[in-house]
Length: 548
Image 1 (tube, rainbow, N blue to C red):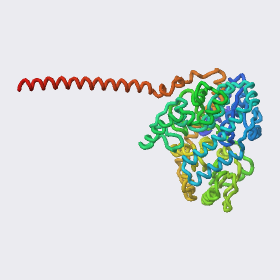
Image 2: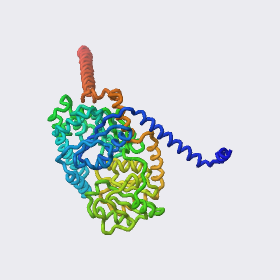
Image 3: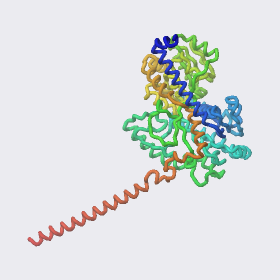
Image 4: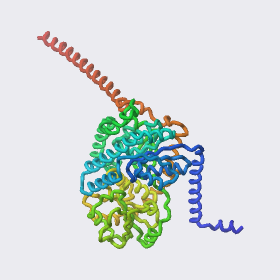
């Protein structure tokens, strides 16, 4: 009776809380049911490159999800990163190989890329210099790996069911083909229009902006014109593998890998494509059924902070904390760049946690904690965190979206500009240009985001949309990998476009026939018109002579 009486006077907010808790329980129960359907453990191989930044984090997040779902995961990694992988997850089986690529070389490219961006290097010269340099490192590591017969024999004898191939470098695709194991492709960014051509995805230059431009899906006439031209120019470059991947094309032929098809068609053999996209952040676009959106692989509920961070957070009062991270890019930051932010943070009311790998400026204000490492996801999930200032790397943007923290973007290179454009277009943050960066610009951006409630409201709304999923992005990726293994193949998800050559795919043969028919029709019309003119001339001219 007491329980009934208490229930009858339950407040509305209590009922709402019960409904919310019930919804969460049902969602995670459904996820557990899905996980429980996995009976037989699969055998999965993850091939890592020489990099140790965001590309590694996202790939390993999928491995973590597979392990949590009872799968066997082997990580093929160079000996320099082996201990890092073992310490991350003891359940991974680590397969090592030697490589002539050193960590110092990778760090040097990252530092030089940042230095070029800060020095005002043009995007195309600075970023593509970095791509060329990293491509050289990826090629050397891939060559070294393929030459190690003992390693190749061990992974071939392991009888893997599926390979997770990050498309940030081509080597995992070559390894999968070399050991004759199907693979799934992981795109470490939004789906670029250029690669969409290769993977036979629908492309419309009217509302699909090219990669690395920082344009939105609402393009001006000039942008649509340039988008169309870029799309057309990408056709020959991405179908001509010696132009796009000259080193890896040589490796493919040298080791007799898929000699019957081009490198691009070899990459197109992926069973599925995982793309770092989600409608809460990315622009809506049509994709094929074999393309799965898994944006935000590193997002997850926050864990309690260690004491030094928690004490600092609690000392921030009502103003809260500003989290400032620039990923691995700060390794190449100069003192002038760091001083800009030190001066800016002295003018904001928030406490600031600043991830900086180098030495802090001498005049670092007292409200700033400088640290070489920080638990970014856990800090973003803390209720005291009010704003995130970053270079707009995709992992950080999705983590901020997950935890509903507005963003100030300072893009440097690569897909940073594309992520910043999406942050702005969704109304969840602002962008500050790197060129001509000043302390005043940083302070103004922080004030704009903090004082305009629309940014907070927008990101809370989109965060709720983003989190309204049965499975996390990493577990969604793991589920689809298990799906491939369970069914042996997912050819039913692939369109017939994969069986068409370049001319057929772009209807060039049809266009040629239509143009020929049109030319013949014009010729016939011309002949008929010419004949009629002659007849008319004979009739009228003959009648005139007769009258005369």
